Image (cartoon, rainbow, N blue to C red; front, side):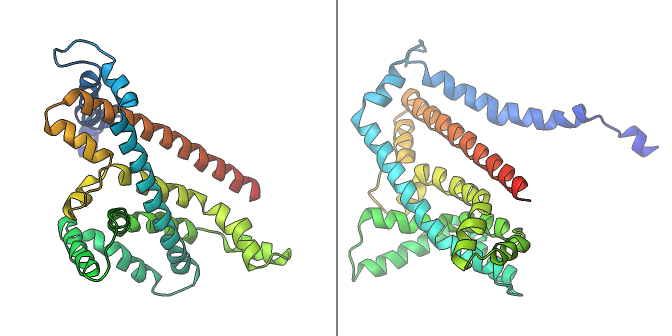
Length: 267
């Protein structure tokens, strides 16, 4: 009888989720769109959009942010792929425990982790002067590395070993089997890791502020506009980055679907 009283349809169960999306996603985005296409008097204008593409400082910051994000993503991928491969394919009985050691820093307060890294960088710079760009890459790699390892580990752990055995039976050596079988089938994990690393690396200026770095990225630029109460230009830059994130998400979604189709064809 209790089950009959509290029985809900699927549409009714979706109501709380829909209300959450409306309150915390749709409405804030609508506010951003409003400020992006209006001026200080509330009149419609495209000046904010034109200013983004004609301001050399803005374009320069965008290009620098992309370079920083690419460097951080590349370093994370180079470190994370061998690590995830060893943990997933080496047959270690304590592989999940070792993986937990890489994920464990994420449980520590963000401020404490970056403060500790700042002290390490300060000790290093006592004997070696590091470039601000290098400081940026080191700090962001330290923070985002677990986000690259985890999807790669999950993907490689689910890899069918029989495919590698079939490749070896057909005469493929270890290198050929890796590049022709393992690497293509691990692309969903690579795409997920790159997405989770590249996009935040373009905007996470909090890390740079905490290590007293002079590097200026898109997140810093947006924050500077809002700090001087220029919500119009700040909202336009945020909206443009949001559009870029949507494009990247669509592209990565197509890559994932393509890889799933290829995997189905192989199987």
